[in-house]
Length: 341
Image (cartoon, rainbow, N blue to C red; front, side):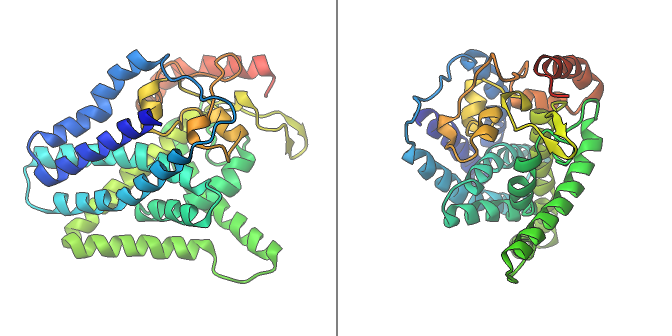
């Protein structure tokens, strides 16, 4: 747990100093998420062993709740700082550093929270998503993605040969629609009226925009919209990278083989895995969604492993010809070896 706490909370501290003090701190915060992460991943690729089987991680839940609470002062503190008069270079550095944090750390943590067994943690995760105008992901991820991952019924599983930009539009719209339908079907099955979760997500997003308006007026709202778009793009990049080209076998019309270790791409690098709360250990998460993030395991022989860390692969995904040259052959090989197409 020390690795997770030190790496994530150091980034929080750097961001806080960047927003409060300016000066060299925005550059240091951005460098921490980019250059330092890249080089430390090279050193730590083999230094993140699996946790002992059956071990409990109460401190992991505490860190997740703390990061969830810290998300809001960082987000709205960022809106306040960016809305104030500051040098253009400082604004660019603050925006980039905070946007990367929201997309890589807050997103990964909110993902962990919505999988928690207690309602309070799940609501906190939902509020984090709603604050960056992406509340529907709390429904779409749980009720669509985890059921249909690695099939064409999941909008967030990229097809072989599909470029990121086409995928992003399809996944955003598709997850919004399918998440809504799944929640409506769930409410109808329970025979209860009640408030549709999307109404809560909409209210949360409206409240977030209202806070930005109060903090910085129209300028504050524009910064919130920009940060939200940046965070959402990174979430979609993670989905794109982690399921690209992998498919479950259709064993009967409309019925697929169970999700297995070969249906998600993984990354072993120790630094960014800690920064993203083990989100790059994606196969084990799909196999055991309720398992706490410190206990997720990685088997290099049975799970597809990306050639670089998840943030590096997400950057390469922005260049579709480069991405396809690197990944299509690997995806075909895994599909052939495990007979999943």
